[in-house]
Image (cartoon, rainbow, N blue to C red):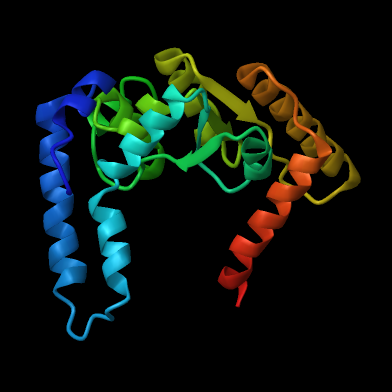
Length: 219
């Protein structure tokens, strides 16, 4: 990392000892798996820098954005319409769920046979090692499976900041109408949170931006 972020992590309420163990462990994994690769492309240095500052510079950016009055929205899934968040000058961030952390704590709220992904995002918060959750004004869950439905109920009890979007599992007319209603409710939630309305102009602008961003991923 480019500097010491300990004071920032402390202000966010992280468990500094557990967080240090997490960062050291992930750093070793990254070095052994990726940085040790032969003939690693020069262009990957920027990606390596981003990864190295995932809990540092990026969190500092989110903290500064919140001081400016911008809202940070945490999402677990791509079904969450990011364009609505951006249309209110908000920031959409993905949440931590990539390591086996705090599973014992998570199992106090959800069944032991829940999938590792669910246990992970709950474990990160319950052990206080995820600065992203700490930065978020709301956390948006989506009902892509029964396990998540139950987990989000518990996660809301823990954080008090979970908004759940019902995601249909079919492609019927009724399913489409349901999803549109859920998007509308999410829009209203964001507008209430930000204290302002989404305009057609800003929505068009952000849709165009996201289209340009996603196009290279489709090639």
